[in-house]
Length: 154
Image 1: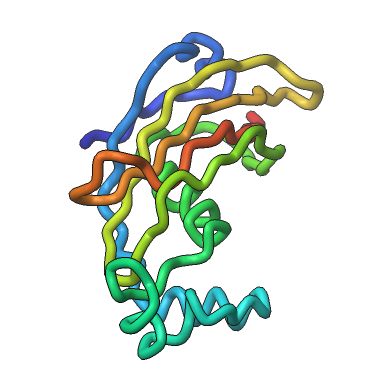
Image 2: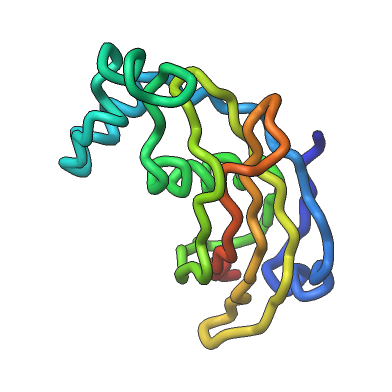
């Protein structure tokens, strides 16, 4: 896996249709799940009660919050594409996020990115839309598929 480097945000306009990735693997362990539960206040047992999950969950493990999986997308995607001469980047939003398969505690995930659109915006920026697919090691069905939108400024 090699990071694709471009010089300026405007160079992103030429990358529509390009597929990047996969990223390096990230392990989603119970400690990460517990920290996310504390940060969000979502302590539903399927995420944090390891003993109950052993008895009642398919596979006998807790599962990561869907939004934890989504929140890891920027971390993984940052390893796929670098704009070397930019002042800042911001999250613009997302469209049609689907949580397809649960991520069990201890699983490794990675992301693939397909750039689906790019357009110039005011302030010397480029808004980029990408289809992000989060894969789970050893599973055919992805954890998440969604369209993520960000803006990078020169």
